[in-house]
Length: 400
Image (cartoon, rainbow, N blue to C red; front, side, top):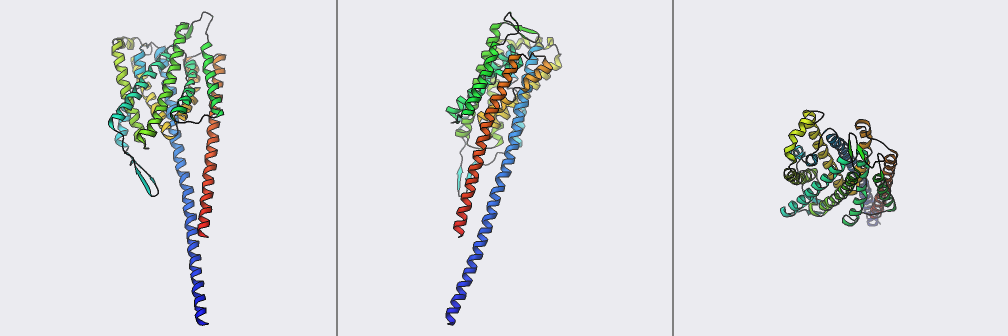
């Protein structure tokens, strides 16, 4: 009898110990789950802050750069190569960030598995930056031609077509899903920009851009140049996203600065060759003397344009890095109404009925895309909640 009592006591004590250990495991599991739930929220806040900062760079850089570029031509500037050069030559302001920002370790850890990411070869990286730089030089020149022959309102709204090109390239290069809402957005934005080719300022077929009057043929040339530039810019965004995914495979801000600097160097060299080969460099001194706002404002205009477009470049690459090339382009399209409104206020552009209709369609197309992004965000949150529920159920089964 005594031995049986002792065994019962031992069994009860062991059951108590097991119960206490189970409670401890349950408490620690709840604590771990709490940290897992809290950690993503902190990461999400940090992610959204970065998205906001990059978006501000894109929106402000695009609006200011476009207006200053239009002002350059309106007040006596005539050099296409110089107007193109200032879009890429501002890269030296980013060089100090290479010394301030330390590169993070190039590996990704998944619990027990640590994957070391090797740096790509110099030949691959140099070829990539050369290709991107030539893309930048090409579409910057086409944008300059469009900005010279078109009013800011018309020019900005035609740029909305780049979203359609970007969706097409993203579908083939980045495996971007094309949903009905995105298709609706692309169609509306395409119609929005297509309306502007029918725009006439008078019955003579001439188009007036503030104090300068251009023929119908130059208006069409500016229109086609802007559409071609939009296609080139969209292709460059998709190629940049592909390079980040397949070649670099690492995530840090230093890489964004490096890409901005090196592709700008290549583009600047190509544009400088064109500037000297065309002979326009010999007319720059005379152009500065005849500039209507004076020499000082002539130089300040060029400096401000260079800084603005460099901020735009950093912001656009940052958005590609954090989200996708299509999202980066959507933020750029969001800023399109900003430049026309400011142009009407400060540069006295005409805001006709066709331009108003085109602007409203552009906003409608943007909202359609953002609604699709909202639906995708809801699906991601639902999927994460489902994973958390499954993890909690597994932990309860293991403890029981």
